[in-house]
Length: 169
Image 1 (cartoon, rainbow, N blue to C red):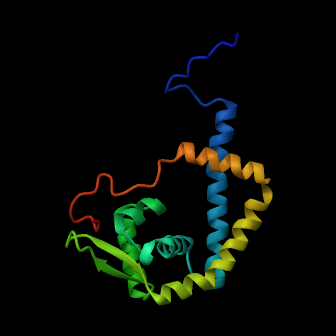
Image 2 (cartoon, helix red, strand yellow):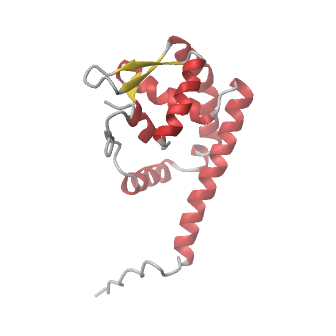
């Protein structure tokens, strides 16, 4: 009969397996983001974070998202997203639309110029994702990683913890 080992205390150092998994995640993420960002910047003058925002909005119903949902999707603070959306609005890629149910809330809406910019950058980004990451993994490994990320990450949700005036309906 197998024995179950108690979990390590919260202050116990990570063992070799844990450290390898954790540091590997951090290094892979940083390296991939840096490479993908450089490719998008060189080919389209578009930072990776901007591409990601445009992509989420493109995939949303009516190509618009509540600001708080967008911030959660791309893992930016609300203030960081507000600054990014301000810049994208100045560039004509995004427009703001008020929420009917909350005059203080706002949607970010992808413009036709934003759609064109995204379409131009998409092939570059997808080729980079495949070349730098997906082609290095088998289909089974991709499934395992997808399952692991679903266990680790919270499900995408609404505006948990939002307060009135947070650019959120």
